Image (cartoon, rainbow, N blue to C red; front, side, top):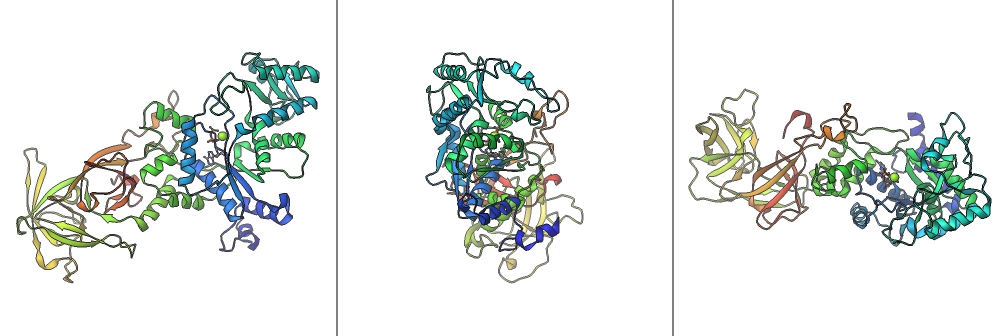
Length: 567
Ligand code: ATP
Ligand code: MG
């Protein structure tokens, strides 16, 4: 297996192994198939928002087109009028663009092809390869039978061509009620492939379509639409997920029976992305939205592209993720930690560091002058030489994180305790001299002294237990901070105990809201801006922010500390 992958013909110029699609494509180019063109498409059904699985498919389709100097189309697969909405169309376009891809002038809708598809259906009827069936869908489904035994032929299967044509025209004119007639292909009721057992091509639906209005009351099925749409757009490599593998003979059958050219699109299948702790079915995501388990499609806990964007993910991190996981021919589950790693890696490079205290404990520096504001200069990002510096005010009263103090700390606690010294990052070394408790025994104030000799950058070395982040009380800004955890508490949330469903696996603590104290440098931060709150994680400004109050979302923790409850 490894030897095969390491063979030189299976590596690209950077020594990276090619995936199986790249190997197929290069072979097609070499053989001159379809004039050596590479033309892919991303074909979403506009019945929901895009999720990270779609993002993978987008990166794959547009990525292959880019790599082989080809083209990639965006095509809305809008054959089912009942579930599709304009809102979804718009969000899908926004998400594809945001991910960094461009369909240029090649935006298509399967509904653009309704006339042509209708003509093709007529052609099949005329050639004796399609018939109108008057049975109910239940009868049809019973007759289809099971894969191990031949099905039963419909009593309408051998209808004369003229009668079929007449009925199909009347279906189109709206003379029949829904469910009374369908058009079926006449293929093989004994085929071991159930999809070849006279599949339905058209059904009656008296429903308006978001683009064609009431022009049609018969609508083509996915299988009768997809390959022909590929053909009409000049697609060469039609890449879809594994569940369509078994549809491929049908995809080919339609093209073989409808077109004469040598040019042929071909369908290839890859394994869909599954992520641990995540549900990816659009139906389930819609349920979460409709039943208000989340605030909307773009809730930062959702695996949707818009949710990830709001959460603080960057397009680069998602593209890197898609690249990192590669593509497979077998179903698998990717650890959601891999996605989190990708954004952490990118934000580490680009996010300015700031101080924020999310669970504040007041510290009074007893020997520091009252009213003095010292302006300390602190670098924004040690990972980014061009990141610059900022001014951080230091005052007599500051906040530190409550968890950074222990009244009776064990030896291994590298933070503050009575009589202990720590460095305040970018400022001074302080020593805890005393503390005050309220009537319930909670610590409310620390009394510390600072050593003016130890100012950061002064060169004075002092061995201390640790370094803490802090915020000056006087100048701190209050911000709402939304701390997200995984939306599901089980690794495979699709699996539920008997009598329960995936929603019973929701993590009741997926959102905690706190008021943070943040240094004033970020006062004018805009929605979407990203920061590292030092020692706490990566955070971004949420669009809910107003001029009065900033709202932050936690994108991801600093390290993969989920299991350790280090929040
Ligand atoms: P539905 O169940 O509604 O059909 P879908 O997730 O297949 O949902 P589509 O809008 O049909 O949604 O998907 C558009 C494209 O994205 C298809 O080519 C599909 O194969 C691909 N895709 C969908 N889900 C995933 C996934 N989890 N991983 C990779 N590709 C996916
Ligand atoms: Mg689909």
